[in-house]
Amino acid sequence: MRVHMIFTSLKSPISRLEAVVLAVYLLAPAVALAQQSSVTPKQEASIQGDIARHFGSVPANPGPKAKHLSGSIRPRAVRKAMRKVANWELKQAQPYFGRNWTWGTLYAGFMAASDSLHDARYRNTMELMGKGFHWQLRSKVPVADDQCIGQTYTELYLQNHKPIEIKATQEALDRLEAGAEAHIPANQAQIPWWWCDSLFMGPPVWSRMYASTHDAKYLTYLNEHWWQTSKTLYSPQWHLFYRDVTYLHATGPNGQPVFWSRGEGWVMAGLVRTLEYIPQDYPTRGKFETQLRQMAAEVATLQDAKSGLWHANLLDAAAYPRPETSGSALMTYALAWGVNHGVLSRARYEPVIRRAWRGLVKQIYVDGRLGNIQQTGVAPAYYRRSSSFNYGVGAFLLAGSQVMKVSH
Image (cartoon, rainbow, N blue to C red):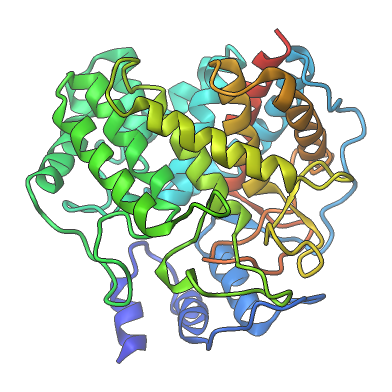
């Protein structure tokens, strides 16, 4: 029965063989979070599923790393690294553009890169993407994942002021604001943003819709539901977010709680992308800034001194010793944004940002591939060094767009 549901619920035209791979991934039994030196069958299915959906690729031989890129945070060096990665990704990804959260994150990165690199080509490509999808979200009553692409639609509207660019997104948000309910799994908290990743996918759309319409109801909705999610998933002890309620009491092989680096990155990046459009005098703006400061202080202590990046399981580097690029890039983006906007201490966090950016640039291959990106999932997992996926590239471009401003 569940296999039939997987086949019938697929949103994009993929082959039956690819669907079988996805079914294996979704139906495989849970794997204990333990130290790994090779991929498990479930993780292999996840990797192959992401490849089948054209989110990225994991070649056996990705070639050598780039040798002529600097890890400096000076704007010229950052732009060079960003352009190399952006150009490679655009060529790889454009034929397969889609509307889910992986693509929405990449599009956010392309929008940031267009401004930072003074290159209209990326923004023009985003306009063509929007027109190709008729400015539609993936569903009429979208979960947060399907709202993510709305960040790009609304950013384009704020530049172009063409109502068609936000019409469908606004209608979808209005349905949610009026009480329509998107699907929530039975075993999760019965709140719209029931998993921490959703705080990147959804709230920045709502804050941008406020900026587009000046209607305070969008801020009211995001404020209510952000703090509802925070109350459910945020640990006052650790100043980190559990991925969802099924992880509230989960532990890793070292007995510590499981805090997924990409999950923390989603929240921190969601915080700053939401803050971008919350008025300075909004009553709870200070709460958002305080949460960013708390999370920043915690993740700074967990940065790997050697690589400058973060491990998939923040509290258990031994179990997942390889640096993970997507979560690290999202956290670097948030830290740099916080410094640039006076929310975080420059003296405290600039050294953290410098180390992190240097570590991120070391993940670039000679052709522009960005490696060490964990495949889609819900928790720390094994991934291959060559693993490159669209959302990780989007995160890298977002990070670069703020890192280059730190040295000014």
